[in-house]
Image 1: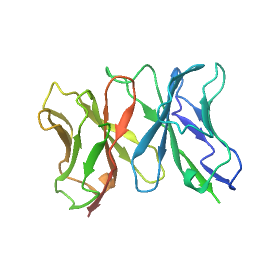
Image 2: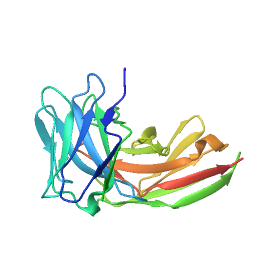
Image 3: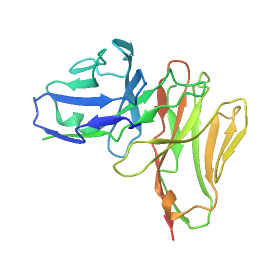
Length: 116
Length: 111
């Protein structure tokens, strides 16, 4: 049973381009979370999705950022018109059910986005 | 009110020593407190977690101590080993499946 798979592992984009980050959850997991980690900082919650639904997007910037988790295929975090401040590691996690009550979130290895 | 404060930022311990990392929170709605271990280039991995109905939880060399009245919790690593060298994050969660992470502690265990 493969873990949470994120790709690409490293992504370089020029300012103004679009970045698309993909996350395939663990088999059987229908809950996906995206977190952002800036250098020397902890992880910051961005968005929580279930299949075809956004449950909590309170951590997403209001502009340029969007996320989806379609019925088929991976979850996608899309950043439009990237700026240097978007450079960070983006982690995806998945879980079998909502967290708590003994349910654990499993994290992928992250996508390191560099905006030049 | 959503923050979790973690200290120290970095910690150096000799092999066999005890590593202690502390966290404090404000939001009394938090009811789940996990600790994550992260190695360079990897994602965080759950190490141990506690709920506020107990004051201590031990798993092998790792122990969480929880003080509900002080809104503080800490991770103790007994008999620290060089392989424990990593970044450790405390986190907290209330309802809604949203983890709030501390800033992280970079632990180095010298041989």
